[in-house]
Length: 64
Image (cartoon, rainbow, N blue to C red):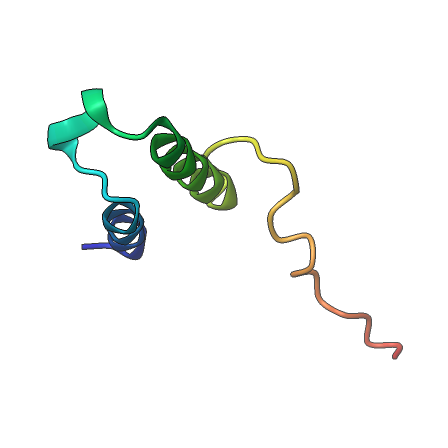
């Protein structure tokens, strides 16, 4: 299982969410999980996000 799946499952458990009770789940908990999912997808470059991923990953100038 990949790291993203494990992180999402961990967060869902922390928020007391399961696929069995989606109709009665706390809307704030669902919102928090959805925010995490969308942020992680944006970080991986799969969806647009607020910040450009990797903007600090450019190599430093050798002149320093």
